[in-house]
Image 1 (cartoon, rainbow, N blue to C red):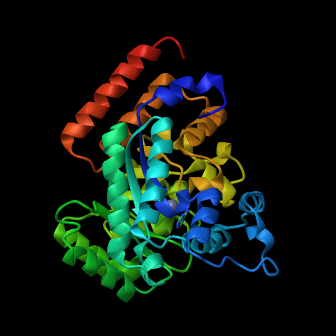
Image 2 (image 1 turned 120 degrees about the vertical axis):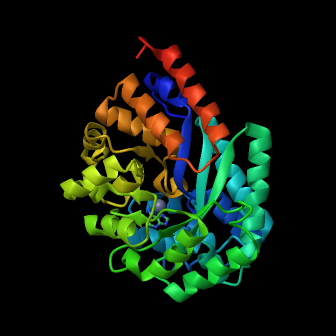
Amino acid sequence: MCKSEAHFFLHDLPKCEHHLHIEGSLSPALLFRLAKSNNIILPDPAKDDSFVSIEALESRYERFTSLNDFLHYYFIGMSVLITASDFESLAYEYFARAHSDGVHHAEISFDPQAHTERGIAYNTVVTGLVAAQVRAEKHFGLTSKLILCFLRNLSADNADVIYKEAVALGHFSVGTVAGIGLDGSEVGFPPEIFRGVYEQAVSAGIRRTAHAGEEGDSTYVSRALDVCKTERIDHGIRLVEDEELLKRVAADKTLVTVCPLSNVRLRCVSKVAELPIRRFLDEGVRFSLNSDDPAYFSGYILDNYCAVQKAFNLSLKEWGFIAVVAIEGSWCDADRKKVLLQKVDEWAIKYEGII
Ligand SMILES: Nc1ncnc2[nH]cnc12
Ligand SMILES: [Zn+2]
């Protein structure tokens, strides 16, 4: 919960989260607990003393120098996840926290290849995540979807293998997995590498997003849209480098999933005020605010909302716009959207004239 009393209306604002890597919600406390119970050997303190304690690890997380520097720790962290129950604990912990921040619907990404590459079966991962989704909906009324992400530093063939496994298990057809995404190191791994798997997803009517324009320039965004036919763009902050593309994204109502605190921690910008939030609002670009890897960037979704309010002092109307487009850009069904939009109307009536 945000520490600023002034932001209570942001806690109450019905929120959707679209850009959250479930492996990035692995808190140092859970990381050490699972390392112990699963007998996982963490890096030798003689080589990297970040793993000597929770405090040391948290302090290392405050000093990421780039996306790749963060990814190094992200992949070590997730090595403690072994059983379906580990994935369930991880995801349930995230859902509980998201609920306490006022999230009503979450679309969470996972990186199956990072698990299959170290011998954990794809279905073990999904079984654990689904169990947590079921419990979260029952306990908190929080609905959720899974997004299967391909790691761009691995080959297109490797992505194809995991895609076909998900198809063979019927995960897309029954809606266990709602769509695909692309993440990991961006620069040097352009979207067109994954054209083949995205073309299959287009033909099968599977939803598509991709990280683009985080560290990579605006051509990563245009290539994700043109080649991979993505319906959303994750991060996308470098969109503003291309005026025409910015106008196209606004006109097409493409949702951009912005992650303010992540962008600061990974040094894509030096402060939240540098993000193109004002520009997006003025141009009518639809965007949602998200936490990306909250355990690594010490900020969950509400912290991100509050950081944006501190930097941009948005109006009730602007926050209402953000909440509405987040719902409309979600991959849940029309009935769920209707319920969520009603909650935003109630929120607007409650806070009219107060903020
Ligand atoms: N911010 C990010 N960018 C790319 N890949 C990621 N995987 C987890 N977080 C990521
Ligand atoms: Zn991300």
